[in-house]
Image (cartoon, rainbow, N blue to C red; front, side, top):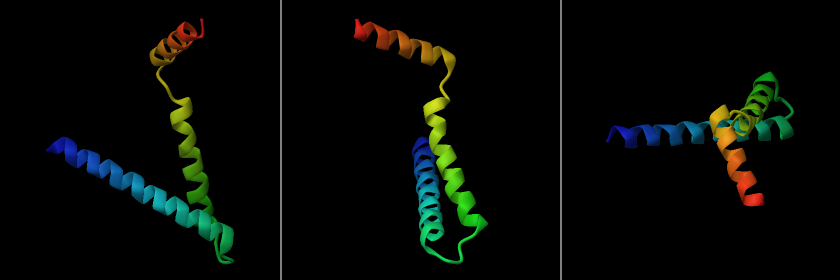
Length: 73
């Protein structure tokens, strides 16, 4: 039961963050009164989107590299 609650909480946090990011992006692009808060939301969301691509433990990266090389042969 606790695992389900954590999973729902994570999805809620991700959905809430996505909604805030889209709100900031649309307001920053189209509203004349948009300012620093919207810009920070957009820049922060974009920066977070890069993390999963670049943050991988070294042992996992090495294992993935060995697997990729094995399939290229």
